[in-house]
Length: 494
Image (tube, rainbow, N blue to C red; front, side, top):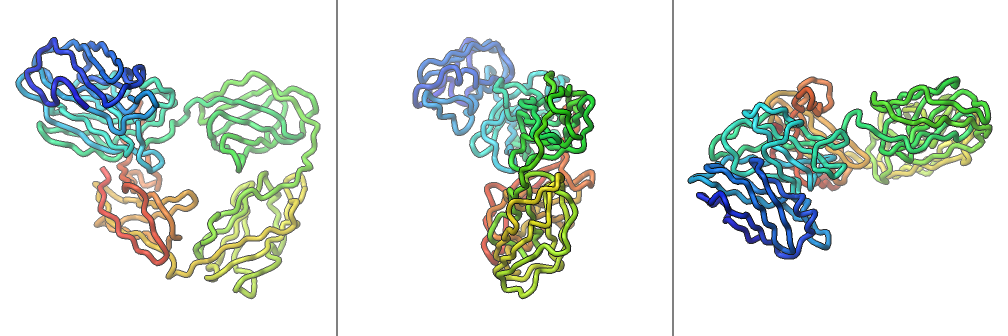
């Protein structure tokens, strides 16, 4: 990208017009909106074709940093792969401090995240006052703040859900574990930042209807957990709430028997403690629940499983928790008798089998009798038998991941996660760890320092400010095949 003045130029006249030239014509509106200037200055931005011009209210003896973020795109909609930064000084020397880091979402690099850096010497309120420096992450989740003055900085990141380029209550937010001291001319490596969903953010209720005479459907604008929903109706007792297994936006409500046609106004509706507006009452239904329950998911979903895996069937509605004496009915497996273990309910819709001690290695195909089960209305599943089929891996066919993670403080939890599996362990005092007994596949690998000892990573809070627990993520995915013992590079959580 051609530019004027040249990068790192000094003694730039204060009446200079900054100009950048792209390799092709740009989307003018998007590119103009993607320009950040630090320190803040009166700026007139104009983009025409492949040229971007900035008329700036420059002051003497200052270092300026102009950033074109990754929201800038060409006329075909292609974004910049990395933010572009131009630094220059109106005095004889440049500030030369810098901060680098990486932002993640769901333990994968978060491209196009907004990253703000606050100079703590200014006395402003972090998160409410404008930041002194702004940039965006590239496709690989990395960012750079260049040409910073020596001082202490607090860095945060957010995913701009509403597209207004400002931090709002709906945005996913990442807070740091500590502030950064930047010395003159030095590069400070920030800790990895993990974007987390907003707590108690407002969600809409898009639909409220009666499915039958004892069930209601709540359909929200975003995924919610049934345990986060508070719901009451006037004159109709609520017997329980559960998440719809097939759609995380839906919560189903069990009620006492409804009076057909009667209107029941909402007495209370909150999600995560935040009130949700809905004025229309729900009309009672006369429809009886005669639909047989059905299995919508088996866990684990993979063909290959470990000998100690818990098996599970997920039904589409809550079930009567009474169990027949024997659920196994037929076999086509190396085992001559049903596997030893315990059947138990893991939730209103999930029936689990916990092997004790372990499943035998080899092909596994057993029939499970369903006609002894029923939903809460007494209706049995339509299928009388369902088959559970896997190949149980021998210990020699399982995989492991080993490495080292360092941090100030302990304990350090190391987690490997795939769409269907989670393995976790605590690192030793010297940071060494081994995750063993893993089913072959691809995993995201990350770690955090458990400062409060609850086994969960604390994301911190912005108001009042509380730091997050230190986090780090290994780049890319870790692939392990049968019998592998993958060794990963050392990482630091800070």
